[in-house]
Length: 130
Image 1 (cartoon, helix red, strand yellow):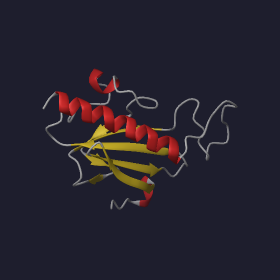
Image 2 (image 1 turned 135 degrees about the vertical axis):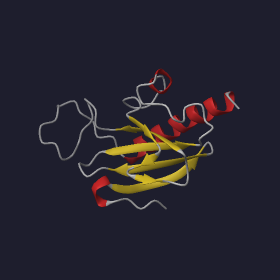
Image 3 (image 1 turned 45 degrees about the vertical axis):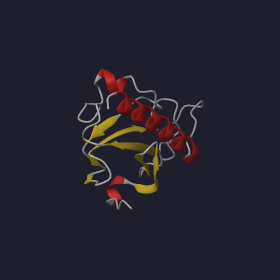
Image 4 (image 1 turned 90 degrees about the horizontal axis):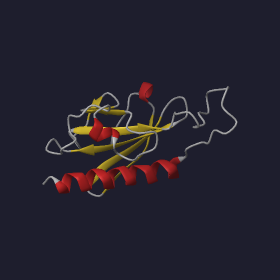
């Protein structure tokens, strides 16, 4: 199991879906982030979050980060991590006092569903290029 530095947040869940490692972290501000790992041979490994192929992935708020480390740690479960966060316009962030009235809190269940959706897309892309 992943051990995080306290500054990065708290590990809430880690699991495999579609053969890929998935990690959910609750940030210190109270919102969640989700990450799916891919191996070095995956066609999206090494891509920047602004790359059109990553931008085309359908996940909450779009891909917000991608890199070889997960929250400051090199993780053995994957060579490249692709992630999203729940801190966008319309997302309720518990520690931010001035929120929009229409903001919604994206809870653990929501993030798990998004992780599964992202992992399914990444697994399909990996299989198409195998």
